[in-house]
Image (cartoon, rainbow, N blue to C red):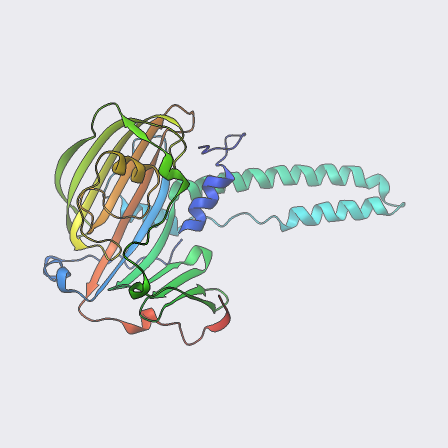
Length: 341
């Protein structure tokens, strides 16, 4: 997997993947106190902010870096505008089309080309900042209802299984699209998906080692940690892992708070853990599925020159409520329907 392009800049594939995956309203910087923590298991509403990013060259950031990382995202510079460069090329072309000004066309093209190189360098530098900072989303959950927003992309989504629908929101244009989804009751228990990566085999040099890390306070919440170390070889490309030998070191901290997107289940072990670390199917905990992950870093090192990086997940501003805020799970009144799928 190439993290960088031929000139050392972030590859389009990685940058697009992270910018389209998931930047940000300014967080409210709320902290959850001990009294609120005691009520978490019975809360109707769970909300948090989440950062996902690639950290080039280990070591990974500290588990308590969410506030600093969120502030960095909030103050990212705007992407450079290329309109003036296109205008310069247009002007040079126009000069060349007129016999009276054709002699000035060549210098104009040279100047436009120089401007384009400067603009590209600026874009590459800012793109690197975006890649390093990561992408933040806001998420709200009520049972199996969900609402997520990525303001940097002016995108949002509301999923209502009870209505059999997902609404895709354009936050800038105030329009939405509606997509029908299958009701959970209509799905057979025998239904499953087959992926081409199911044929990839992970062979361990020795069994993964899981080490408890004790507890720490993250954003006002008590969190317990685990460290997993493993060395294995994959028979083919799967997610972040190309075919070959990989050394993974994963740190995970989670809270005693139910994860609205995953069910309680046994910890992932062996090949299941390796496959999910290489190609995460969700942000669910790998040590205690069903509990909310507050921080996870998965450090990859392998045979390729671009495989020395850390996949990082951070969550903060976690808050709960004893009442369901219905307005969060309905399309805003000032949005207009665009079409349906």
